[in-house]
Length: 457
Ligand code: G3I
Image (cartoon, rainbow, N blue to C red):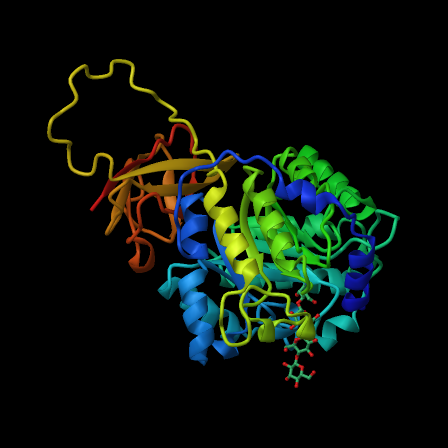
């Protein structure tokens, strides 16, 4: 596929006028004054990420911006099939592992990109077909997702499988020719290998309600109805000089299917509208409560695959552009993702509030989302710091009889049955006021009735 040609086509067909509409949108403003993208996004329960080439982590201007501004990273190339399995059955994780280490040391989550894609396949896979390719592809998903298990926030399980143009159908590829069920087979394999990662379908030219995005919408609706494990849809958002008027409405219709949505590869053609489009995309995400994060496809203009388009938030010297300011302002002005209501409100609240709060009260709160199946479950726990922030936190849960914890990520578990306590790891204990982090655990038995309580230190 000629991605640049497709991109130009997308730019030409983008609907004009919408941007102005987006810019005059009334927002429910939440007072906030974050001064970096990562702090402002975290205050609203979201991440703000960048695509990274790990070779650049040793460039100080690059690393300084990355660590200051972003709390999520994705490998621009190093977790793709050609990089991770250059020879069949021989896996190489050097670049991906390096990025995960960097992320963990700097309080960042990691998007995994991409388990299966028709591009950047190793030569040995390009030459395969039929059941041999299907088996090799599913083995690839299993091996790579297993290697990174517990370290990936969201995986792009399948990337760019739909055709451009008006068909709304699948793209022809060697993977597609193994049978139309290759995508769901990949999602099932990914879930089995890393039950804690959110599993996304990711594509471009989906920046509004059009034939391609509708084809994907129909697939997601079908997957949800049949129990195929899909949790999120990524909208790459490689944008031109205008933005579709229904950009936000398109995100919302996917969210209404019961999946998260993420802006996964945002970059915008330079020119008069660039800053406005960056702001409008950010506002659209903020206005969709299931839009959980935004990733820009590179740090500085010179890091971008789009070369002279100068498509990013920082110039080549590392200076913030007008687009940066618009994104930051939109993050600060936008609403936070609503937190889950408490499951068990106290039936008999105390009439006299205690004069000295018990240790940790008000210091943090925790909520859980469960993914259950017969005989097992994965719990994702969101920890939110109170007004004083935290130096560390501890979350307790009481498991149902017969249930036990078998695997934990982004926290350390004490015990495995009955009451189990989870303590922060090095990189996620220190949270600013209102800042959010997540950890997870897998268990056997029933996850019913888990109600986490959080204590801050
Ligand atoms: O690493 C080799 C180097 O050894 C060799 O000398 C050089 C010669 O061409 O190539 C280098 O590999 C290049 C690689 O980027 C790393 O720089 C590839 O040629 C080049 O094709 C590859 O481009 C990447 C492109 O995906 C491949 O399709 C871009 O960096 C990357 O930004 C781009 O990312 C994609 C997303 O994965 C999916 N969505 C679209 C997005 C933009 O195209």
